[in-house]
Image 1 (tube, rainbow, N blue to C red):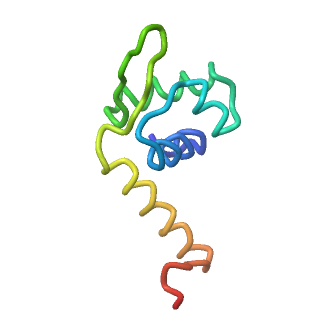
Image 2 (image 1 turned 30 degrees about the vertical axis):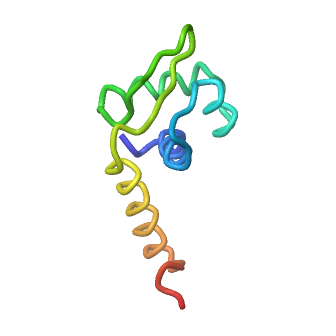
Length: 90
């Protein structure tokens, strides 16, 4: 699920906001709303995001903190692989 950079960027964006609409997320991750909507559908099927409807607008939020923790841990591991683990520097 997290092999796609756009999905990782969506999760990181939602981590820093309580909830966001598809159009707002599309602006943040610099992708089309249609592309973001497809990625959100996959994240929703994986139960990583949930929705709230307000009129015709659907807002997305992380289901819980585990998705963002998973992304953060993956980034830290990647930093170790390339030798740029800044979280170990003082």
